[in-house]
Image (cartoon, rainbow, N blue to C red; front, side):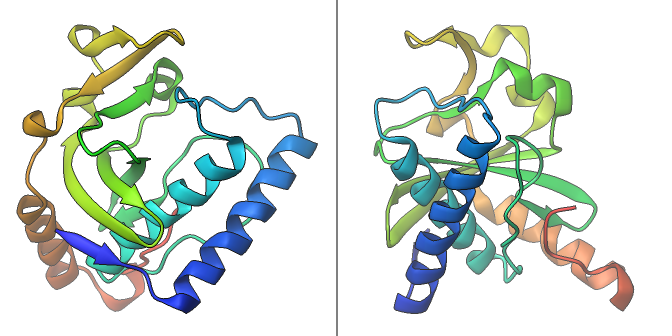
Length: 177
């Protein structure tokens, strides 16, 4: 499922990436990336992936400038979502071992580069964050799932539709907590 960000969304993502990068470096937040890309590119592609996911499910993206790593990027009903983005076409859904301490309910893998992304699939926290999923890609242990192991987006869209139809108007927040 391919999502393309428009010019306005691209500009917002670029600005957010720059601001988040600056605030996190100023606060000496440790970057947990496991790839060779620059910190700036990690921020930009991460936010681009979050925007693509939110665009697919008609959610409002989290545009806060928050200091610190981790936490939810979006909510589907009452379920917290952590969006992971990779530029590798066959990339895996990866989560640092620290994620188990503050786990989200759902992890989504987005593949691509600004402005075009593909939502590869998703997994519940207990499917991803368990001992049998630990691998080492040369930067220490991470939890990993291949794209073929992920649930299809149609299942998550059904979950989102269920929550949308059963929640009251005041409960329909689509941004991160």
